[in-house]
Length: 89
Image (cartoon, rainbow, N blue to C red):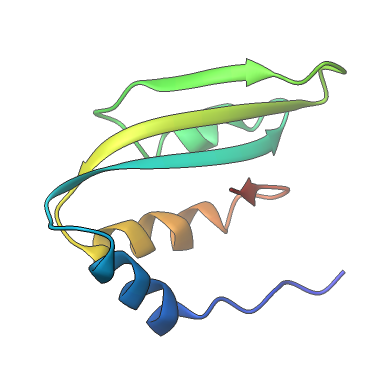
């Protein structure tokens, strides 16, 4: 399956129009079980709330982090994209 192309400019524009920075931003990811620590490593100073799927195959992670600007948010998503099997919500 081909990876969906990420439109960075469009996403940056949406972030800029969503409010003033710094802002509290919520990240949500789903990863295969065993990969949740890779998501947590992206947020060393934030609480990462996790919940296992009903089958136990996947783990959802929710993180609220204070972000200084749109580029910081985009950077997190680019780093997260390197995690095998990750789905960003």
